[in-house]
Length: 514
Image (cartoon, rainbow, N blue to C red; front, side):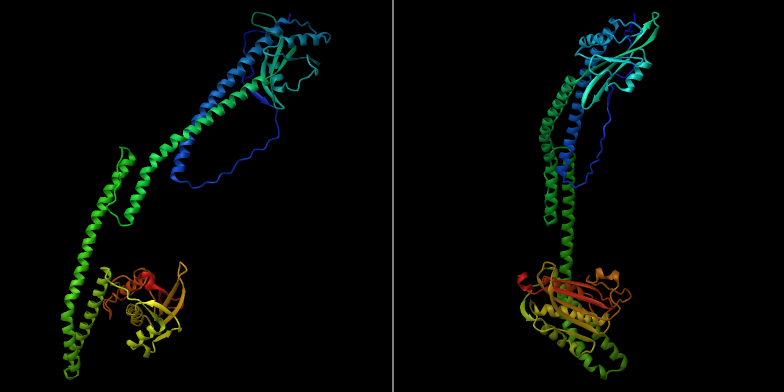
């Protein structure tokens, strides 16, 4: 009698699944990093946590249920097949006659479903089915049956159909704990389509259970994002309000979390900023009043001093050389002081927002000619004007005269001849028609480090030049007059040498300002 050993575990892993290889190609999707808003990132993070939690729970539940289902089926099949083989007696050598009937009898007794039983003995091959050799039994299972007297089992997927294959070698029992191989191996093949259907149902249930959970998780995600973003929006509105000049803006502090600490910190910083700005404004107002008051108080004595110096200038030729030189020096310095006082008063009016624009439609070329004539620059060979006729614009004639006079005078003092005054029209950045006036010279130009500060008050591009004929406020006053027209002024250097100042004023500046 050939016996089958009992109560020994198989050598092939119980839950291993072997799949017949197919031609497959793996495609790695390419993702593109995109910028998201804070709300989207919060929702994405919340949903990611929900997806990971739901996915992990569903995967673990599915795995345990699947393993329990498959383990029950395969344990039942293996135990039944071992018992049936043990109860069936095979005489050696095995003969082919009547063997198929024995195998069919074994197949009918299969649990939990009928099997297809195959036998291999030397070159003998037989089965309970139509084919004597199975295409599902793998070489790995055959090697396990030959190497281990206790056999084994394996789950195989062939053409999309799952199978459980069991190998059971028969042995001679030569002692209580010893056996001898007979060379006869029986195989049982059982379809596991019902188990696969149940496994698919488990997978569907896990998926269908996770998706509604994710949809429900979106609601607390929206609530959490809103609770986080509300203080952020309030902070943004408060910062924008402070940027527009309302320094008394504050944020309501709610709760005791980090966002509440942020709101408190913002309110403290806003209060300190408001105090600092208030102090700076008061100091600036005092400085403006001081400059305006000093300039106003100096006008009367300076008027008297100018009258006296004019009389002294007339008699300077009749005085001795030293006295005449002193008289002329006093006259020149008094004139500079008078110019400085007038410029300070003009700057004070700009600072106090008291400067007004009295615009009128003028012939721009004619206005520039009058500026040059009034200062006798039209007779100076160092000044050339390129003024096309027919260009009209709404300007304040007095302030435009100051702009041209300051730029030409600055070019004559600090640049090099010839000084060219150009006039043309063009389009501004927004497409509006603008009047473009350029004053260029042939001097050394402006040093690159001085260009950003060229319109600052009392700024000297040449550090070695401690005194000059001007007040140091000419370009600052020019810039203020251009701004009052709604225009811009910029300074730069010509490619072939020399400085160039470009003024752009809307053709209808008076209407825009009004």
